[in-house]
Image 1 (cartoon, rainbow, N blue to C red):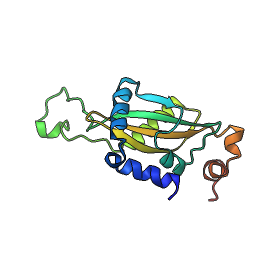
Image 2: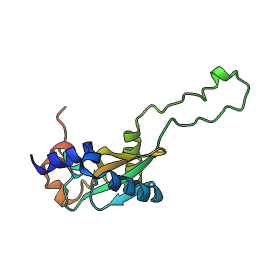
Image 3: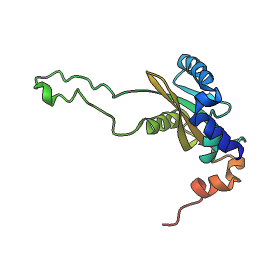
Image 4: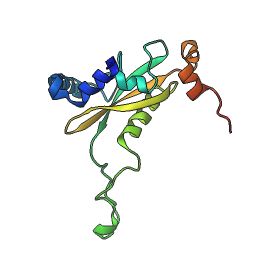
Length: 156
């Protein structure tokens, strides 16, 4: 087995490999951080590489914290019967991972999102890491994967 296979196995069974305590300590630190944080290295390297991450200029990793659960909808002020208020059971039309990508894109508007993946969760939050690339950077332009996926115009 290669390195990435061992890494994926380790994150799939954290109790077996003794990293569950490390994950718990990380969550305590991450709760104190802001909602969107640029990080130096990806937490799950094997997953980040699947989305095109390379440890070179022009690629960044952003960890985004998303609140868990359904979104609360404000209660209408005018008179309606409770069934028609639409307050209970309201859920967003897009998933948490997509919301994380949108928030990262809003913060770093000059970068393009290559992909994102789930990192961890606790009772209140979910954390995702978003891989982003600066498509105008010469190092990124020279990268075949990014060039073929994002820069080269698609044939229609």
